[in-house]
Picture (tube, helix red, strand yellow):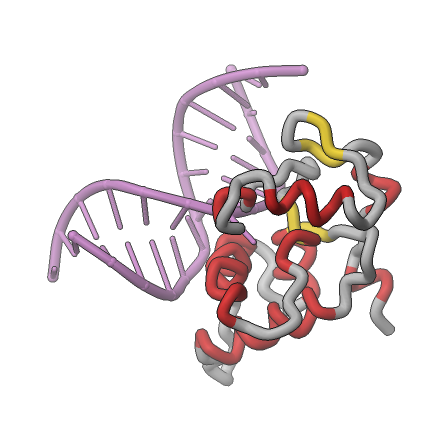
Length: 116
DNA sequence: ACCTTGACGGCCA
DNA sequence: ATGGCCGCCAAGG
């Protein structure tokens, strides 16, 4: 993440990530990179991944709606059962083939575009 | 203190 | 289209 004069603490950044994820509507998805960009930390998508890893201990964070930039379910191994993430997405009407969301762009929810 | 490992992404061959 | 490299940066060994 990019730090300016004010040093943003890790825990605060994680909180902000979770808050954005909570805003993703059912049936829509976004990416690590877009979340990072929205939080002014473009280039630190990786850090968003860490926040997501810790998100399972948090209430109401639809972690399955966050995928990588190609629409691949790269976080599937963090849902207990490896097929859990896909099941959750399909339950919301998305189609997943080979760990990839079909028509990914059509379901993409970009926070910087949607939130205002 | 050093090295490795990621739920990443952009760039270039 | 695919794959390797490399910034990025927190955690864990």
